[in-house]
Image (cartoon, rainbow, N blue to C red; front, top):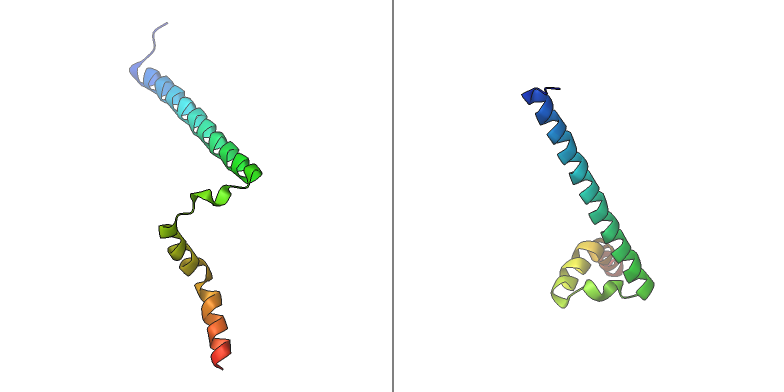
Length: 74
């Protein structure tokens, strides 16, 4: 059985895509398992660093803070 160059390329490409997809799923599952484990241990906040916290608080809660300050001034 002879396989043309195009068919061989298509078969190799399909196999490579299948392997890449499998690796992405494994990586995603491992990350999800790690997050679940962190939640179970209740140390999911351990990744927050002091340098990150100010930026996180500012981006997340600045609208609430500003609205509260406006109400207090009025």
